[in-house]
Length: 356
Ligand SMILES: Cc1ncc(COP(=O)(O)O)c(C=O)c1O
Image (cartoon, rainbow, N blue to C red; front, side, top):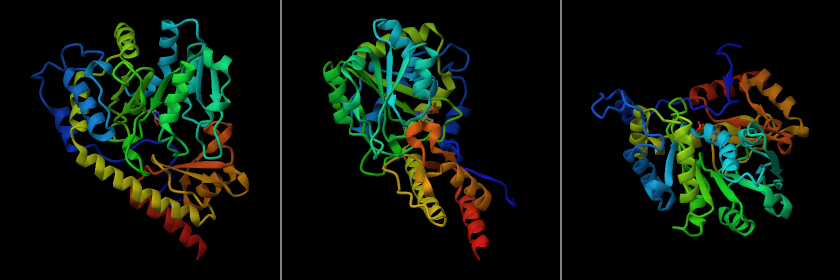
């Protein structure tokens, strides 16, 4: 097809990073951030920048010692169950949404633990009342993801925190799409903690991959319960999980630059609307998400593979069938708003030409 495929299947950013990030990457070695081993937990300036952003954008107070870096969040999501099991070998279960980013389940499997999907409702929100007491007692962690990938739902984080407190289960809240919250302001599970410092029993996980188009740089962080963060900092240091010093410097620069993140938000919002119209031409009514960079579109007749095939054949657009995110995704496709507007317009023009 003339112009090639428009690949909207993987949530990988396509836009350039902020000039402030490029300047930080190109800066000299005055602070020895290239030649010496970087701190595993993260430099003081990087952690301050992350805590400052959480305060400004999410309204939560996190002491810098209750926050540490990860090499992008995927490695943390995949590794967390093993480390939590080391800390508490009496528990063996990982709870995660039945419709979700596949790495939550993978983390349990990699650690030889028991993955247990929590059912989601028709609105794709967690149905925690379906978790039995015996399973909760075995749970090392409950994953929640809000805004959610793939369905774009916002969870009731206060209710999730309350359930976890009652059940005595640590919540790990993957908030990597927080900056891309459309239905109201960005929010964090850390707004709903217990003592100490309001962070007990909670962990929030964040990333610059989507907010700042830095998926290739690998900069993420986790923050919350001081005892859990302290433990993870210790084991991760011994295992050699370190964000390179220049990346720490560039990440701090990105966190201090809200302007590029605001512009990126608008770019995603505009693309989601254009993609919604494109799907309309296929008789698909996809709602705009409450958050995130995906349209979660119900396929005509519930056949997600047939819709994916038609989108490829008629528009040259590649999307992900919903089953890839769990059985609960059957009958949907996920469309990522990760191509420049001119590519989306090319796809729309192809459809219009065929229908003339
Ligand atoms: C829900 C969710 N969590 C985590 C990640 C991983 O992001 P990264 O490792 O780039 O920080 C992704 C990436 O798509 C995601 O969708």
